[in-house]
Image (cartoon, rainbow, N blue to C red):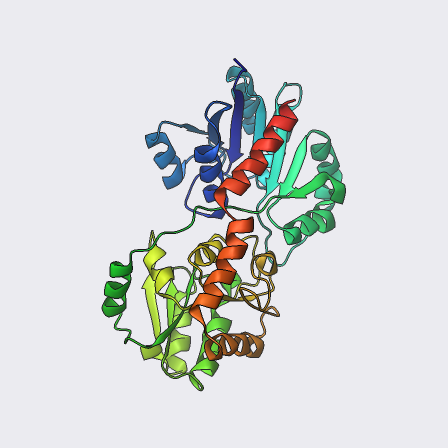
Amino acid sequence: MTKRIKLLHLTYDMRIGGTETVIKNLVEGLDKDNFDVEILCIEPSIGPFGQQLIDEGYKVSHLNWTGGFDIKVIKDIRKYIRSQNVDILHCHQYTPWVYGALASAFTTAKVIFTEHGRFYPDSSSWKRKFINPILVGLTDHITAISKATKQALVDYEFIPEDKIQVIYNGIKPLVADEKKIEELRDELNIPKGAQILGTVARLDPIKNQTMMIEAFDMVLREHPNTYLLIVGDGEEKEKLLKLVEKLAINEKVIFTGYIAKPVNHIALMDIFLLSSLSEGTSMTLLEAMSLGTPCAVTDAGGNPEVIEDKFNGFVSLNDETGEFAHNILKLLDTFNKKHWNDSCLKIFNNRFQTTKMVNQYSTHYKGVKC
């Protein structure tokens, strides 16, 4: 019998987020006959997803990195690689890649690095210009979650374009409960027949919900029987509440706070909105797509790779309130649920299913090991 490949995912932690969702889907989705998978978090906490995986029987460990460059982290990772006979070290995000690539030197472990997203505004440094070629030399394969993210690695991390392959994030399609959706509409006091715009995201400057609300105010002038549902929490909440009050649209904007599993909230939305200034491949955007919900998004990061303009939604220039509002109005004015549902599911099923992502990574793992 062929020996199973010992695969170790190296990440910050396993809190609930996009990167962590990808790792969780890979861990659960890979063929158990071919792979023995573990997770090592460099931060002291493993996070909720980590605990869920432990409960499912997977091994999730952690180190005690708290910031700054810590040579002990390199030593601890190298010790783990050797003691657990790790075949492949899959590093997620830049800092785990630095530690993982250096730790793998003089071991038999192969290294894969995946970049999951970029900060806004993007930048570089002379340190990275010096060290990244060394890290690339220690790395067997590099992937990015979108073409935009790949280009950022070329422009800001000095990684040769031909060294990077794009593998899109994949998720399991959401399954909503029709009865609970109607109950939710009643709970939120949204009248039947009203059209619902919505988003699910942390309330953070990078998500630019200020622009979203200002665009929604413009939309209301032509479609007064429309509501905006904002699912999430964060530092921008008070600012956004004051903006809604200033625009006198309090009765039309609903803040739910953080919802752990917002599937029925997303299913309640007729149109999903994403106004971000920067994105990798948004998981909530994929979730909306899996439910057949058309989207109005900005052209930040990987958004235009998920939403093909005029096919499964509309894409506007970044931080352009008028254009964002115009695209929402186009969706409302020409709304045909079956048409948009079919278009969204076609893109989702062809490109963003979990199985497609898992199969692509599985092929890379086997190729690197050989």
